[in-house]
Amino acid sequence: IDKAGKIESRRGLEIPVYVVGSYESTDEVLDNIDELKEEATETGWLIFDKKEQEWQWVVD
Image (tube, rainbow, N blue to C red; front, side, top):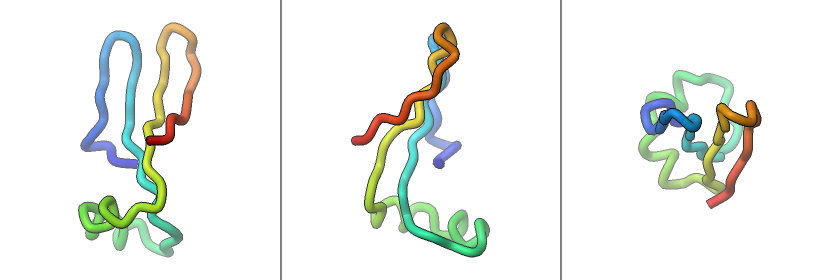
């Protein structure tokens, strides 16, 4: 989840997500986030609709 890339509006919240594999340490992921984004096996958006109060996963 890339919190820095989030988009917030009156309608909801969109957060970019990158599937990068398994890591034991979140520090390792955060230290290498830009490189890992390029190597992601799957990307998408986690979207929250404020009106419907629902989360949705949209694959790019």
